[in-house]
Image (cartoon, rainbow, N blue to C red; front, side, top):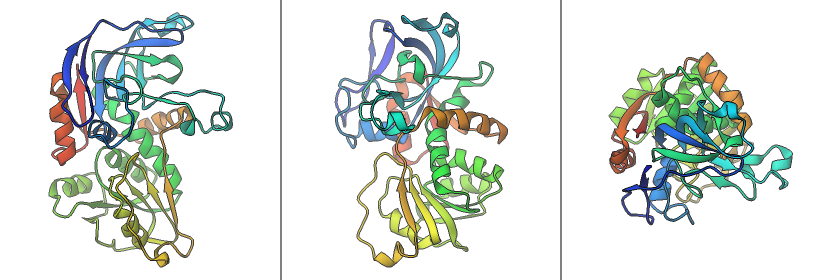
Length: 327
């Protein structure tokens, strides 16, 4: 198999040849068709998340076909198209797992972080954490749904049912959730870095009612705001923009420090929430909704060996939508 390997954080990935892996009990081997590149991959590669597996194959928005099964896996899994997400395994025994909060498991494994991921031609996955996907769909189009879509969906649920929704940072997750939110008849207000004309035009093209810089206030008070950009300064900015009782949801796994702010920004029952990982039930909810809403993912494809270029394009904001690697 071929894989793009991170030997240590803050270094470039290296293309290597490895022996084809063999699945263990309860595991499957997947021939990768597409793997989207997530901002979390950047946090891993750039050393902003601690203690990754080393060496590591990043990537956790994986679409592929099962080509080998381990002991205990149903033979019918062979040949199925599946999706492999960030949450790769949970213990099933801790207090979080037993109360339907497996995203907070005390002993989890994360794809492309604590176990090898999908920047490769093949990947091993826990069968119980691989989702069935449409065999007729375009794998490149499906790949961003495995994290940008699922985490965006979890953020949208945390944001509540309010009609006026602000999105801070208009990348892969925001472009998917905008389509779902508009299908739900919400109004979208998009915030980007000042002067980022590419992202602002992209948001308008997808139906955002208002688009502005992250330090601006929208024309109406927001019922909720979701922060996808990993910038702590956006928390007080979003609190200024939401109404009394409004919610600010932080959707990233990593964020720079939140600056000191006056209590009056939080007062009047405003809330700040974070989203961590995902659950399998999120996928059971989201994939049918994405289909009903007619979600279209906007992607830029790269060869597997061009993974470093894809990461850099994401890092510098040179692309709209999602970057996707194709082995």
